[in-house]
Image 1 (cartoon, rainbow, N blue to C red):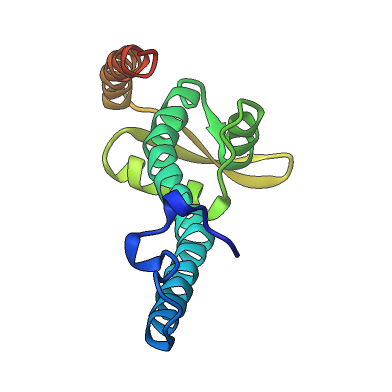
Image 2: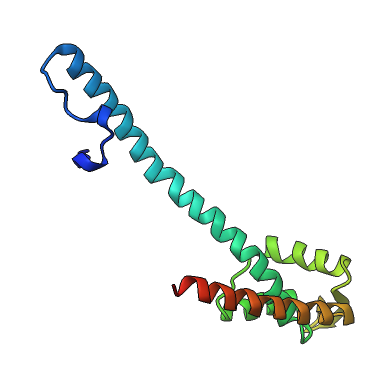
Length: 152
C-alpha cells in the first residue's frame, strides 16, 4: 500500500539518510501507520455508519408505526405496509415495540379470529392519537431545521 506524501505524517516520510536506524524507523512507522489506516478505514467506518443509521431509524420507526396504526392492523399487515413505504422492520423489533407502545398507553389491542386464525389487532389509543399529533409537529419542525442546515 502506498500513501501519498501529503497523507503521511512527518515521522513516516522517507528517511533523510540511508542509515540503518533511519530506514528501520521509517519502516516501522510506515508499517504501523499503514496498518492502522487500513484497519480503521476497513472496519470502523462501516460499523460507525451502521450504528448511526440504526439510531436514526429507531426514532423514525416509532413514528412510522404510530402513524400506520391510525387504522387497525395486525402485526403481519403492519410490517407489510411499512415495508411498502420503505420502512422494513424485523419481527423481533416490531412485536416488542408494539408491546412497549401498548404498555405506555399509546396503543390498544384486541385478539380476534380471522381466516380461522387468532390475530392481535392494534390501533392507536386516544392518548396515542394525541402523542402522534405532537410527534408529527415535532418531526416537521426537525425536518424543516435539518433541510435548512443541509442545504447550506
